[in-house]
Image 1 (cartoon, rainbow over the protein chains, first blue to last red):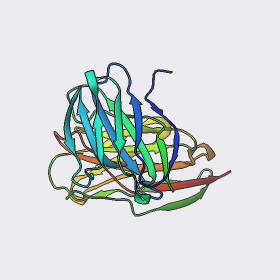
Image 2: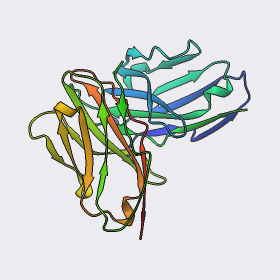
Image 3: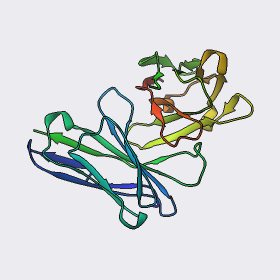
Image 4: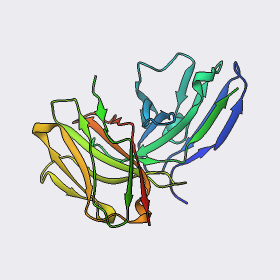
Length: 115
Length: 113
């Protein structure tokens, strides 16, 4: 399967714990995005990378969230000191090229439940 | 801030009925417009997009959408739905030159056989 993959698919944690999610984009894609989606809502932008550079972060993104994309390949999203409000589906997407209308290819998501 | 509105949150149709899902956005400049679909148990995937040219765009599986700039709308249509069209449909908009789309909250479509 050459699509976007995400691990783990499900994560249950206790409030206050740290969690880390991984995303492996399609190999030749230079852009990588993280979104959060809650029930009944569309994906909400969190941050994105062009190659290894993190170019933009949502103003809504708490300081407890951090993302990396070392060497412009896979990416990790870490949430520190999780809160119940962090419970959501975390989606990763990737795209290729230099134009803003290229489609994004989405992964299956990581569902986080904070108890 | 840019916003995207999908007015129909839940739609229930019988097979062969016609479909129109509304999408309106708030940004007045150049935009790129997308409809994504998520079938049960599958990833979000692109249905169609508009970035320039003919405002009537055709996508996969017989879907089409029309960009009406004066109405800030990009409504999705299909003349005859099938049971397999049951899915969540998301409209997304990004400003021309921006790589970050804003998604609507989605429309859940159920098609009864």
